[in-house]
Image (tube, rainbow, N blue to C red):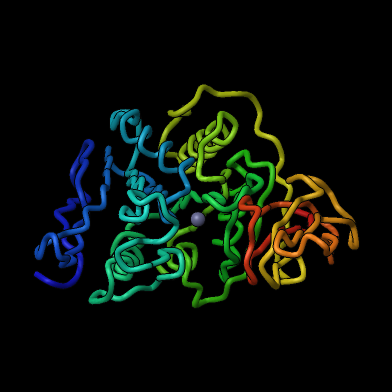
Length: 336
Ligand SMILES: [Zn+2]
């Protein structure tokens, strides 16, 4: 077998099944090697079906650790319907602590709809969009800033042309308890998991839960609350699973990130020193930071200013930058 993706999933089986998706990929060490992607199916009777995934990018740990814990904690007797958990979707990237797969350089969140005879990342994308996503009412894909970026906690949905489905997605997004949320317009052919979920007929929900290639007390708490809230809102469970109930969920401030002028980009090699923090409200023209040139100590650092007003939502963590690196982004608060 040298093509496709192999599995023995039985979606009708009751109880908890922990197994693998296997993607053949011949390598020097092992001619019949298979990439093993863990997947957990939990079923109890009829009801809603929810797919939870993380590790779409390998170095985004908040979702990976939370979903690994959920696999262990979620008792099939507590649920109604079906929960599928893919805690480290691009497993080779997770094992290498990288954003993209070291096997093929594949960025899973740019690989949809994929190719059944392509690279491992492309085959996985094809299976997810064509086989797995269509079996679920809701697909929740957990991201974060990864190693190179810190990100304000934000939920995200992509605009759905069907008004009823779009309203359901926005309502579910607001149920997560996240302080901020985006409605992105990535178009019908979006190569992201959210585009794939929409094309597969599922409601797609995503979000950024932290970053820096790490997990913190705060980012893990916000991730646990979002997963619990989604499972409760979907009607899969009656009570939170990962964390005890912690009071009323606050309102989600909707944001818009739709113009390249909302980001500050490096245009040459340099070293960036921020002058603002994540979550700050900034005005157009306000100082964002300074760009140093450690190779030209006689040259003053350059002041970099925001072109647009808004809330600072992300920042590059690595101080040294190359042309093309995004240093900061501001998003525009918009009415709900
Ligand atoms: Zn990501």
